Length: 101
Image (cartoon, rainbow, N blue to C red; front, side, top):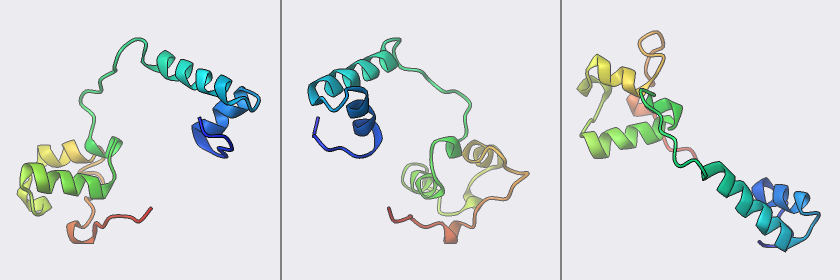
């Protein structure tokens, strides 16, 4: 565990370990173990937008489904991408871009 972590999980663990890196590493290991001790959890019947941003959805559809526009998908597939479709319109395919981080 690097010393001096100032954000996120590292800071949380260092704070819990009162600055002791070894104790912080143990806390992190325990947290991860406790999260996964019951095995993986699976989500069913969830739309892609629950887990992905527009760019990732577009990339997935382009690379793995062969889609080049929303017109290539049927209504059920569009609903599988966006949970509020058709009440909310789909984003403009040509205006979806990758955000810089």
